[in-house]
Image (cartoon, rainbow, N blue to C red):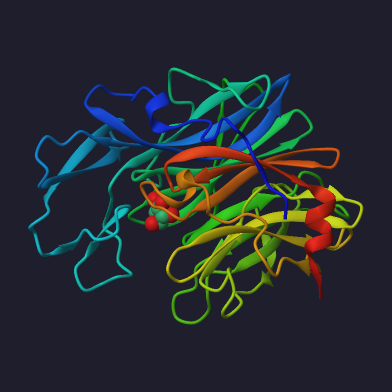
Length: 353
Ligand code: MAN
């Protein structure tokens, strides 16, 4: 696969972002949703910030309080053996690797704008910030689906109730209407198709079954974008392959002559995240036509292999112009990058089922 990584990569890094509070530092500007708005390319960045800790033994975890709209800061000592601090992203209960008590940062969404898709200017203030009891640990990994003149923005809403997917909408990237949670916990990586197919809206989603089952991609349908049903498993993990550990939708699916193309992420059990593609039937997107046996993009450049959480390429949005896919993607849970791929080459690389 010929992959053209932009010379300007990484396009946006934490150093480019002013923290939203003086006592905080930005540690991530990544996993951005992408949209075209007028003559601009918009990246809706996931900004991860944490309170500055002067004592290297103290970890400070920020939590949004919906009662007074302020942040509370929990302080934990690294010597406290009740907690497991080995994953830089989360604080868990010792001996309970599946537990998740706090996050080490709070994420919210901020807009970056560009006329050429390479150079971005970042808004001064947050655009979408936690606002209710389902978002107290933050909001993450947005995707943007444009339907007519409305942009539907949906993201992981993280709280002690779990990680679910909530949706807001905007027409101007200034004012926002909140529509509540559309997929209950645990669910992430929702991707709403940009048009109705045979009178129905479709969405990919990624539940995480607990007693039996795996984190795999499902598809659901809706008549109003808010209430989703007729859920069906769509894509399974594959032993021994790049998508053997977990997977989820990536960019908003787009139409090609051969079918809907979805760029999705897959990871191994040791958390190496790659991007691949799956082709779905144009008339019936619950039918898988073809799928990548090899990744179309894997972590290779230093900014992809090293960072807050290395070996991660994670796309939440692409812009397709003719035969060119401009895939924007988060790198190492730290920064944003973009790579161009040939649509024809991606389609030809898929293995038909
Ligand atoms: C995982 C990672 C983190 C994220 C949490 C909560 O640990 O995807 O980046 O903050 O889940 O969503």
